[in-house]
Length: 150
Ligand SMILES: Cc1cc2nc3c(=O)[nH]c(=O)nc-3n(C[C@H](O)[C@H](O)[C@H](O)COP(=O)(O)O)c2cc1C
Image (spheres, helix red, strand yellow):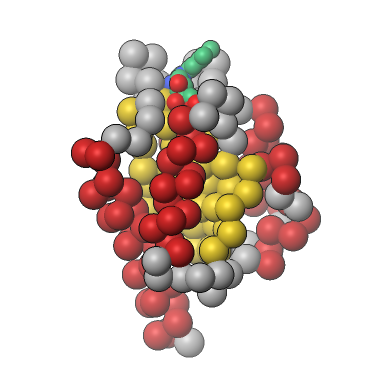
């Protein structure tokens, strides 16, 4: 199973989350790649069986500009069978906490086989590890279901 984690991060929080998720996936699936969104070849999206989005939130609950090309690619490419997850960091002091995760969730739910979402307050801490594990497990479970169904 080819898994890609694709993230955007301005000040490093989401990068930290993406690395943590990457390490957790690697414990089970060695074919898991980590990309900063500006290094990910968007036209190659459909080559992956599973995509995990890592995004911070900008403006008033908005998706960062650098994620928009990827967001639109999900709307235009043939990705219906793809298993996805949406994760991100945000600051609950803002009215729309992790709004970009909500935006990705709504779109991925329609366009793909969305397995899980995860919102982290600012930067992952030891107390968040269990939720991160559950997020990864939900996605791996969905992959196993798909394999079992053939
Ligand atoms: C101008 C600005 C607007 C932001 N707007 C939101 C927001 O609407 N909702 C939210 O949850 N966090 C918001 N944040 C907080 C960031 O998403 C949060 O700090 C995040 O962890 C940054 O991730 P990064 O370190 O990967 O860049 C905002 C931060 C800034 C500087």
